[in-house]
Image (cartoon, rainbow, N blue to C red):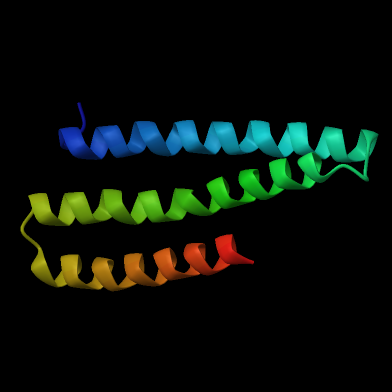
Length: 97
């Protein structure tokens, strides 16, 4: 039995689901691009897979934040909030390219 809260379990479940969907999009996009390199849909599928893959570390940070709040470790919560903000800005910037 682990010592994790319900929110942490939900985030872990979502993290695994996002990683699996990302992997599927990357495989499909790569196969599509190899078969027909001129299609825009193949590149969009690859980009979606990469963006989803970039969400996984953000989810991991949120999972750490949930644990820190549960343990009332406020210094850790502040540090995690700064890291989450940097990751979110990076993800936003990458999605706009």
